[in-house]
Amino acid sequence: MTSKSLEPADDSTHDDALVLIVDDDAMLRSGLGNLFRSVGMRVALFASAAELLDYAMPDVPSCLVLDVRLRGPSGLDLQTRLAQMGVNIPIIFMTGYGDIAMTVAAMKAGAEDFLAKPIRDQDLLDAVSAALDKDRIRRLGMRQVEALRANYEALTPRETEVMTLAVSGLLNKQIASEIGISEVTVKIHRGQAMRKMRARTFADLVLMAQQLGICRQRL
Image (cartoon, rainbow, N blue to C red):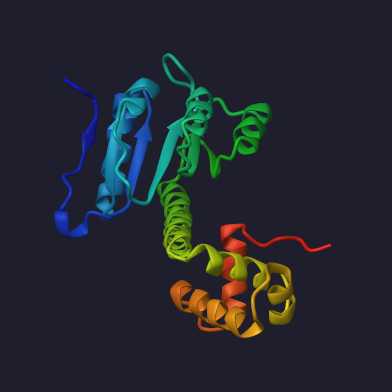
């Protein structure tokens, strides 16, 4: 019988947040699961780092509540492995043996929080709620950049060239001179780029370019 447990997902709420809990103490692990369920959160429970690594994480806002000291690879080892895999969910560490060096190592590696056992329920709930909010914002930002990139890839080569030069600070007449077309044609391509990028103003277009990392530095 596996120690992994996941609340069944409702297809209509497939993006609901998920709290992942890794602790080798079965009683504590179960208690944490009950705590988060009591406030309406979905949970997945794991007894070891290996169990979590075998788990297919859903693409939803998530956070990881992780015991530092585990049988087998430690919580810090798991943190390192997740980073290597490109899994960027916020991590909240728990420990009954916390010390300054361990806390510093976890925080330097990007941990969201570090709580010493015994942990007050409200402190843990507050930390998890903040971590989930942070992951929601991160995921929203990623989706926005993906949408921008899709719009950018729909530009023609000439529209891409004109947009890149425009957002880098060149005037229409300078762009026309640099790429050998008329200023009127530059205006047409620039307007098409703004329309396809769904930019309401040129300032919006510049911001989009910055998000995509395509602004050139002009000497």
